[in-house]
Amino acid sequence: MNLTGKNIAILGAGRSGLGAAKLALKLGGIPVVFDDGGSKNIDKVLEDFEREGVTTVLGLDDAKKACEITRFDLAVISPGLDASWPLPQLFNDSGIPLIAEIEFAWRELSDTPIVAITGTNGKTTTTELLQRVFNGCGKRTIACGNYGLALSEVAFSGEKYDVLMVEVSSFQLETITSFQPKVVIWLNFAPDHLDRYPNNDAYFAAKKRVFEFMGVDDFAIIRAGETFDVSIPKISFTTDDNVKADFTLRDEAIWFRGVRVASVSKFPLIERHNIENQMAVIATGWYMGLTFEGMLKALEGYSPAKHRCELVRTIQGRRYINDSKSTNLHALETCLKSQDESVVLIAGGKEKGLDYLSFRPLLAEKVTTLVVIGEIAEKLCELFSDIVPCHQAASVQEAVSLASAMARPLQSIVFSPGTSSFDMFSGYVERGNVFCEAVMALPEINQLEKSIN
Image 1 (cartoon, one colour):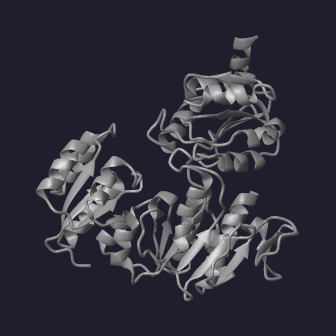
Image 2 (tube, rainbow, N blue to C red):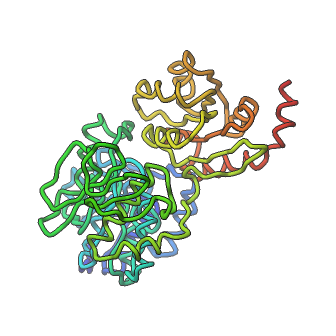
Image 3 (cartoon, rainbow, N blue to C red):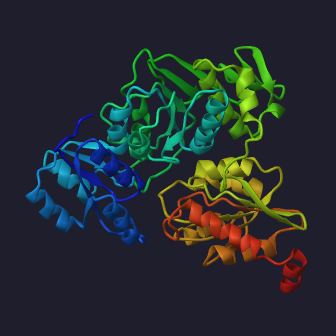
């Protein structure tokens, strides 16, 4: 891709934007980065661009002036920006082609096979597992996209890979124009991001675009029971009983088309949702020529990354679990279903327009006390206080103290917000770190009990 002398607008000054700007420079382009300037860390971000010799423009008014002075050949949009927002619309209305950052990077990487991992939940764990398995089996790869390095950073690096494991979100797929993975893994679909999309159908349509440019030589790996079909070769997987699929769970073992692959005990993650993630991984490896034996060996010793049903600490039998990565109801549901006993739940955060009423039966079954935080706290109390004791907390630290005081002996305290964190934090990582710090600062349980008696 030769961009010599071309003016490239990069929309969004985050990691994807920086990667796209550096790639544009490498390809001979003249990048200008546009941002609304709303980030708390904008000064540090601007230093990064200045160090790379990239011009930055902050705010819509200055963006309009820049567009009057310079005719841009292409606009590359970061996933955090909605294409309907004023800044992207400024370029769209001017007739400037608007493409996704992953589209921009893929055009430079189109000779490298891409495995695209999507779904409402489980993307990151599956992407990590794929990286581990393929590298362990001698196929050089890296996890990137919506996780790890931005795809533009990979393209900029010039490193050669046998295959790329690219986590893709609906936001990244909204403005693709030719992005064509070799393999797509579709893990699941559940309502989410209704603060960005007008309805669930729009969210689904954005996500399904991952298949749009695939051909008969490409391949799909799809959870059985998903309510759509694709016209390319595919295999399916599920842990659901009595559902037909290529990969299934039976007698505490994973089976492939009637042939026993391995006991579940051979896999590092044994929760049902993670068994499905691992099914998707070994299905991908099978399609790309890896052996089941080699993949099982590569999986040995894997442990999930932080903030995903992570055991932080046990104090006199009470387990504190950090599931800050839970940013939607499907993730929260999955976390609660993985708990053997009822729990004290800390949940809440940003209002995303999700339908919480459908969550009432599971909450009544699995939760003895609910502690809520964030923008949606009052709403959650109104919805659930008739079925479970509900308490509001002004901070994560206060929520941890309240939950600890209300937990029964040997009961788990689970931090699984069920929504995003942007009303209080920069993201789920900061939110999870704050929870972990609050847990580590707790006194022993007997002291807590004395304080409330």
